[in-house]
Amino acid sequence: MADMTAKRYRIPAGGFVAGLAADVACIVSDQIGVHGQRVGYMYRDDWGWNLFSGHEDQRFLDNPGNLSLLTLNEAANFDRAIVPYLDQPAGTAWVRRGDGFVRDPAGSPVDPQDGPTALDDQYPVVTGYLVIDASWAITVPSPMNRRFEQGSLVLWRPGLTARLAVWGGGGQSSTERLRRLARAVPAPAYDRVQRADGPTLRYAYRLAESAPDQRQPALYGFIVGPASHVQTAFYFDSEDELWPARTLLESVGPHHQRPS
Image (cartoon, rainbow, N blue to C red):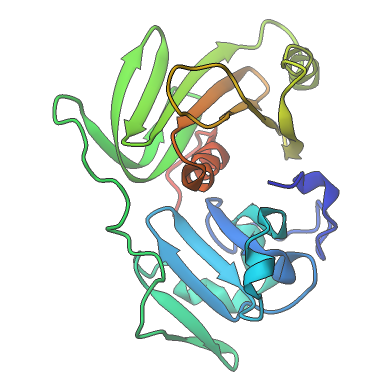
């Protein structure tokens, strides 16, 4: 995935209007976010919305650097016509007609039931908005098992495991803490992304590590607030799970209230 800070979105940082849509992750084609085209086609799968101009060719789509992981609110700032349709269920697809959208009878090109669904009935199953602690929460788009292990929250389903741990601030400012955490990231890390969401600072990277299985390079991240931070790790067996992992990572944020 490309470094989002290297892209020049047509709405600059700080120029987004808040409150148009939920601050949950979605995939947006750069033809929309960077080049200024309107949303022409969108579909929703179990992990959220995917927004395209409708003019992308396969070569464009095969390059993950041409896609951005943004929030629905940011996407709505690019094209407010999508807002009335964002409560439509997974499995639906929508095609632009004038200033609105009509439902595509073919449905989503990604069947919500195609993903792995076999969960462990020995553990609780969670979905939706999940409070991590008094300060932090995560949104889980589709069902996952949950357990607590050595002070960490563990979420998993076949092919994808997430570990989240909350750490206190230790008297350091958010900026100082993130700088310290970033210095400790191993040198071989790649796909490093750093940005600020208001007072919340984010840092993510991938790292290939030796393992006896066929796991892909893991996705790691820090979400840093004024008084504490969340350390995250996402492990997966296939590159197809990178987007779901990034969606989970992007959904981690301050716990204020349930999203509308």
